[in-house]
Image (cartoon, rainbow, N blue to C red; front, side, top):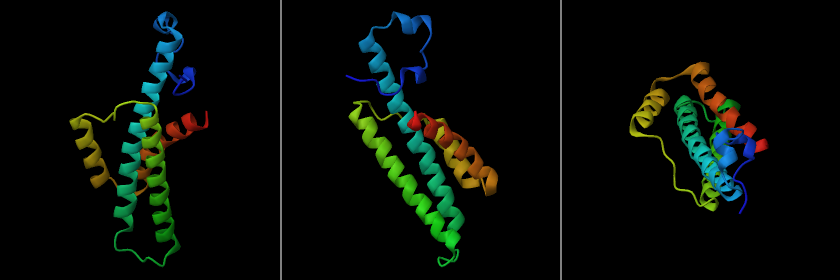
Length: 134
């Protein structure tokens, strides 16, 4: 019976339509939106994990950068589990990108490389981090 996220994060917050919603509808909306954001976060984190693993593939496992990369993948796995459990507690369906977006993500994680590849994912992650902190 609570909001899924701060009401101010809702796409409808401050609109005339928001004003027409009952408090129960507002809570339900924010729960669905939070679950949708969590699902999107999992998708982005899966792309990031695959990119990190691809970068480290066949590199020296004794190198501290290699070990940091594995730690980063483990952290992203834990984040994804947290988001998945949170979405389940909100009673929302598993929101997934449509097939063309999935294929674009697949192409991006396969073809992207270097700092620019990570920058795109980290920008998306920053939005999720800001929302989590709020």
